[in-house]
Length: 460
Image (cartoon, rainbow, N blue to C red):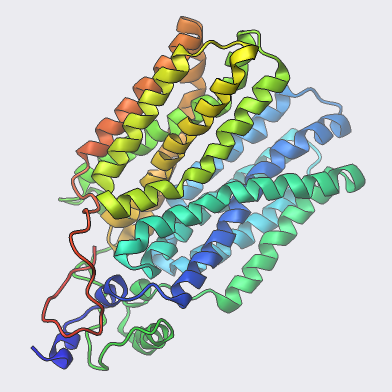
């Protein structure tokens, strides 16, 4: 078959999946990663400002649990709502308006005079934070060739910890000189400036644009910027899934509902495993007689493991998502068994810190894989909705960790605590293995788009 004839059968999904991962697409990844920095930064503002707020408002620490918890509820709701919004107004609009929302509500938080008004501001800011995640992940996925998608999404999510580090640096400069309102004002100005910049430079996903034939010229302009060529008379439909409607009901359509259920279970227990450590590890270690300095170092070691998240992307590229995720889930379970066997004493603390770092490499890779698999399972018509819903269910697992952690400590001490983490890791493994539509292990090198071929490949 001649190249011209083959080209007329190509879809936008094929052009992106089989083409090069060029400078333009990598630029989109960089922009989305900067948005993830905003996510990490804003999440930390309330935690960093609490000591100053306690002093300014003459309050103990306990009342500040309300804005912390309500903020998490807002993020979970924003995950679900933001995904649906991104499927309706576009990924570009979802990202930009989320940052506008975050910026405005951070300014509102700077004007708070009570726990109630601070909590309301954090809840609404949480809606924006939650909406940002699925739209950024979807934007990265839809600009990246399929063979590089898992790695690209994992790289983007890696920048959330960078935002956390940036928040600490900003707070160290602002809080001593200008106080807590200035910290929230900076947290408002930064996302608004980024939103204005993104309005000028961030492109819309061509897969989203392909839903409307009137976007044909815009789509071909984007493809030219990516050095991807299609004949002028080529089909512009995104894939065979074009025409499917967005919305939560689409996640439970025949052929989707089983993988949706399994993905939700995987996300719920992966988040629970992670937050059991974040919420209760310092208390557990303090209960074993370790110093406050040691408990703080334990969380630092755990956080450093988060920078290993690209390993899951590389592993999926090499072995496919079923084998890679299964291996990381079993690694997380094995890591907790090793932690259970370690003596929790000051002379042996070095082994504990190393194992916490290694364990979080496994755990954060499982969190990352939730987004990687979600962007693979769901077609473009409801990809943001599916990714956002999976993230929202994961946040419920984070909330449930508050109870799982305290009851495991009550019933079994440190042994029960680590046994609980082993169980949640194994349940995560079970749900991950039950997913049917995994990313396949690569069989051969991808065919360049420009090569003559009569093969018709459907975008996944």
